[in-house]
Structures are given as C-alpha cells and as structure tokens.
Amino acid sequence: MSHVGYRRLMAVDPEQVLRSAAALLTRKSTATMDEVARAAGISRATLHRHFAGRDALVKALEELGIAECEAALDAARTDDGPAADAVRRLVRGIEPAAALLAFLHTENQLFEGEEQNAGWARIDAGLTDLFRRGQESGEFRIDLTPAWLTEALYGLLGAGAWAVAAGRVARNDFNHMIVELLLGGALRRE
Amino acid sequence: MSHVGYRRLMAVDPEQVLRSAAALLTRKSTATMDEVARAAGISRATLHRHFAGRDALVKALEELGIAECEAALDAARTDDGPAADAVRRLVRGIEPAAALLAFLHTENQLFEGEEQNAGWARIDAGLTDLFRRGQESGEFRIDLTPAWLTEALYGLLGAGAWAVAAGRVARNDFNHMIVELLLGGALRRE
DNA sequence: CCCACATGAGACATTCATGTCTCACACTGG
DNA sequence: CCAGTGTGAGACATGAATGTCTCATGTGGG
Image (cartoon, rainbow over all chains, first blue to last red; front, side, top):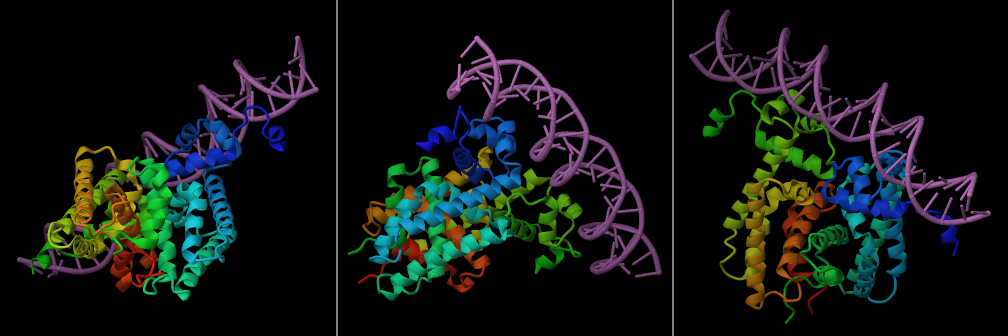
C-alpha cells in the first residue's frame, strides 16, 4: 500500500477535515475557521496549512463534492436497466457525500468559478437525463419535470443527511427513506 | 384601507425587507448587512434602523417564519378530512413562506432561544401529527416515518423555492410539483 | 539515539463587518 | 410655504476574524 508512505506520521487527512467542515457548515454556515478546525479536531494553524483560507476551503469542498457526485453517477450506471433501479443505485452510492451536497446545494454563492460551474452542469445533466429516460420508458410520470426531480433529489438528500445528523432518522434507513419517497411517494399503493 | 395611513411617506415595509433578506441569505448565508440592505433596495442605515443588528434580523426572520407556518397550519385544518387533502391545503398555504423556511430550516444554528424552539416544536408536532394521522387512517404508507415525512416536506419546500428562484420550475407549478412528489412519488401509478 | 517533520499553542498586524453617529435631501401633510 | 419625518450617504471607532509568523512538543523513521 502506497498509502502508508503517503500519510506519514499522524498527518491530518485533508478529506476527513473537509467532511467535518461540511457537516458543521451545513448547520452553521457562518462558522469561524477556528470552529471548523476544532470540529475537525485540529488547530487553526494546521487547518490553515492545508487550506490557505476560507475561500480555498470552500473551493476544496466544492471540488470534493463534484468529484464524489461524478464518481457516484458513473458507478450507478444510469444508462443501464430500469431507471428506478438506477436511481436506487445512485442514492446508495451518493450517501457518503450527502452532507457535502447539503452544504453545496444551499450555498450557491459559488457560481463564479468556471470549472466548478461546468462540473455541476455535467452532474445536473446526468441526473436530468436519468429522469428523462425514466419518463420516456414509461416508468416515471411525465407531469413532474426532470429538472424538478433533480432539484428534489438534492433537497431530499440534504433533508435526509440533516435528519440523520439530528437523530430523527436512523442512518440505516437513509437510503430507504429517500428512494421510497422520491420514487413512490407517501401514499399507499393499493 | 388603513394601510395607506400605516405606511406613511415612502417608509420601508419591514416584512418586505425580511422576505428579500431571506431570499438572499438562503443562497448566500454569509451576506453582509450591506448586501442585505442593497437586496432590499434600502441603505444600510435604514436597515439598521429597523433591525438593531444581524442577530435581531435573524430573530425577526425566525419569528416571521414561525408565525406564517403556524398560520398556514391552522388555515389548512389538518384535522379535517383526508390527510392527503390536508397536505395539499397546507402546501398551498405555506407557499409564500417557502423561501423563509428554506433559510430557517438550514440555518439551525439558532437553537438557543426558548420561545423560538417552542414555536418550531409546535409546528413540527403539527406536521408529524398530520402524517401520523394519514398513516393510521391507511392513506399513507407506514414504512416512511412521520418524522421523516416532516423533514422531507421542509426539504422539498426549500428545493421548490430554490428551483422557482432559479427559473428551473414555473412558479405556478410550485404546488403541484411538491405535493405530487411528496404524496405520489415519481413512479407512474398503473 | 537522533533527526525530520507535522502539529499545537500563541503572538501579532491587518482586514473587514459592524454599530453609531451626523448631515443633507426628499417627500408628505398641514 | 413650512415643519415633520424617514431616508441615503458617508465618516468613524470598535471588535472579531483572518492571515502570517515563531517556537515548543512529540512522534516515527533511519
């Protein structure tokens, strides 16, 4: 494993820092760099060594979110089989990034960078295409637009991450709650 | 109309200020008081005359949100008739406050005040009771917990408000998109 | 055993939002 | 026409967060 040589000593894992930062910033977006550091269990100095400043932190957060979304999108093979199954695979694969998404989806103040914008556009397109494919195959209803289903998925992922963090939903139920509500809704099927 | 006498001169409408503030803070929660003022079309000085500071602004935002939610909850008569119909009435009535909710639901850093907390608890209880009633009457499926349906409703309202603001969903479709997805889901009913 | 390296703690200057103030202007009503 | 009132613009001091630095510690590898 080259990882052993990579993170020598008790070096901080930047990705772990980003995850805790996302969890904190989601519920308190005005958090201080010091608070972010404490939440990650490191000092402000170390946080600053890894991320030059708040802007750099948010940018890294966004890059990680984009990367994980694209990875989940690829892994879900959204072009294969029934669209509903693809949605289930997608939600399952995107679960670890839910907290990240919850933050990034709300804080859309970042619409400045070019590459980020392109990244999100690609992800949005992938999701929208999936829902459209489901409509064209007759699986999904056509009165709910693909664009709305995409936004709704973001919203539900965020709500799910929040509900889990608040202890209102069991972590193991995360997938079921989101997928079932998104696909089947709250009404009983007769 | 007593309104004419109420807002004498070109006086600022505090509620209008709060709404634009909510719209701005939802997508950029680190916005400056100056940015909030500009977004409301007033000067920073005037903003400060109406709301002593950022804390006071957020508090007023929260009070307005609670008041509108409770009003919508009462107006929806959540104890009358089929639960699904009550949900439809509720979403319709809560639409004007969606942007406000989108902000308040994410920024849960405010869990300090006593009365606010009680207000939200009452609203949560009202929603949870409605979903539970729907389950007990056999309308709603029982594998989606009332707590999750409540959180999901918040999430969908926020996503809907954002989608409308971004032009991805027509304002007239707001109710339909949210209610139909929440109740019926994305799958076609055979 | 010793060196290399990452971290934590703290000091420091700087930037920036904030809160408060004053003054000039515009509009409204008498 | 004039007084009253709310507003915009700007100056100003304050405080907090930020960015940068140094130094001590501690651990892991050679």
